[in-house]
Image: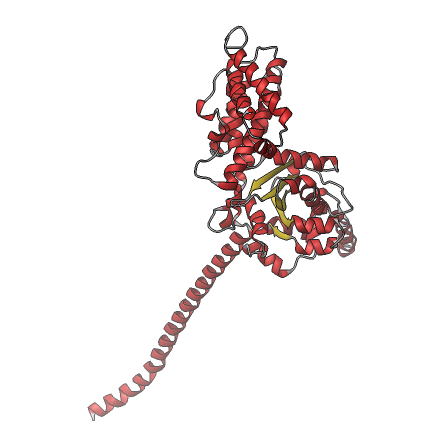
Length: 229
Length: 216
């Protein structure tokens, strides 16, 4: 009697597992590309053997050095969310940007964002006022250029967002933001056509920048009247 | 005579102790042999454990995680990721069907040239979803969407990769390709099968075995 029960029970238990391995999920779909993974690839995957392409190896290896970057990015996203709240949650935004900068102290994008946020609150770190000061001094060539052009373009976008945010909060634009705009647009207005082209700006836009620089300079002159202290 | 008898008396006695001596000698030898066996077995066990530990450490990629050895990834990741390139590339990919929720995209400038690499981190524990594109496997589609567009070309992206974290946030797989191969696939110069063969793959074996071999 017991053996008959066992005979019936085994297929029933086995049936519980039938199809469970055939579940479709996004993760299992992804794994399909590994179905024909070769022994050499397997060994390479474990021992970190080169694929023969330095940059491809770098991509594979970069995930091992990404923890701080990912964490900083999360903090940056949380800061952006705090800034988009109405009223703006400056305290959370500042706290998150500072924490992100602790993880990535040389990140020029984080420094840029922190500077614009501080300006909105009425203070600016003077050394960060020129985009070139965000870039690592010991770097030359492409890295330096990429930092310089990247931070200039990013600052233009960040300033526009900052002004929109302050207006949305029914506030006067802070004097520090006006001063930052004055310096930034004046700098852009002085660029030669070749440099403007590298940044993706036109001559017409350069003229707009010059006008904006004049307006910001004028607004920054009367704290409490044309700008927020 | 007396001495002779003594000799005679002692002789059998001698005869009787010899086997006894031999027996104790053998017992000691056997004991010694047993002790040697145990020592050998323990040594074997220690060596086996060390080997197993090494294999486990490699499978969990601990040397790389601890920075004991690694490739040249840090040469790229120490640079500030390019936020404008990231934004533009993602916007272009979204227009073609890329789903950005739960996916972090980074564009890292190359250390000594105007080139860059792109890395996407798909985290299924944070709501990442596969994108349907061109009938490709979703992992391949991710590389084509992010690395095969005009914006990626414009920002000098030469290589593209993606890491996939499972529903618990544990890494499962990392893949990498040159954008040259991505474009060859998109233009039909190579098949998806050939593209997949050319992919650089890195698998988290403990997690992979659990997911792919024992999926239930």
